[in-house]
Image 1 (tube, one colour):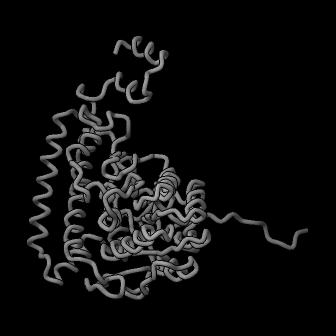
Image 2 (cartoon, rainbow, N blue to C red):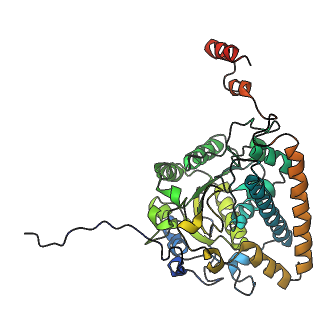
Image 3 (tube, rainbow, N blue to C red):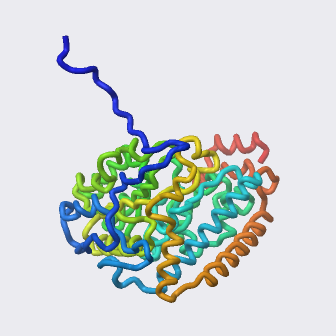
Length: 410
């Protein structure tokens, strides 16, 4: 006879499923301006409260409050607004293109635009981003050619990657955008290695690694944190906690009883948790983390709290696993609307300017897609051919591949 009841396995569950109302109290929100500023040089233990709380600048009325609000130039805010609206217009146009069968696949960053764009504007040219497939805002903030990006999504004859990557898996060395890997978390160890190399060379460039909440459960995540801490790599370790992996709630990856930011503390890395839908907070904290890295003070881990407002991809139907109106009730709101309210309140923006820019950007996207389609769409003959798979693999093509190419007649 046992003195104990039968053991039970704990399987985390979200607070609501389709047809219910999500209780977002688990987010543990702090008031705007409540979290104090941090010095550049500090031990990981000094960031414990910041890893459990939430750095916020904008309150519900659009006011910028607290020490993290200081010293943000107006031109950065206006550029951020333009880039966020442009990214959302880009996503909307390519989502339609996928539904029209012009491309096989697409992934939006709907509701997450502030994070990638805010950090990009806080970094310098020459720094290297190691992104996931939801950071297209980095490229748009850098004014990369829309037509070229669209050609990559369409995998057509003008695709700069010649059809070798899935749609939305861009690669731009010249813009500090490392090739996207669909096997998430590989970019974490790659970013740390790149940052270590920068330090070995005595350079001043830093790296930014990107990963979602679900991928923090991968082994590469922990290996990266070990190397980053031990060698004090000049890297920003970003965790975009948008509450859902492909179809599993963030608690499945370990976010039920603690924040993902606290994982960095266990490795001795200063770590903070930030409102990812607050553009001002994103820019301010990214600027601080970048200055730490560039000052040879080592890595910083940042957990961005946001919400994936759309499906995981065009292959996903989120209504099967979460309430359909979740995004409308997310307590941190929409990043574009929040920045708009702040800019209008300060007299830097208006509803008229906002709608005029949206109209202008919609037209720009339509024209860019029309130009990209001239080089081919899904299923057309105007696309990379079989011969392309033999190129750019070896400096000198091996004889066995030369024979295979001849057998194909290409």
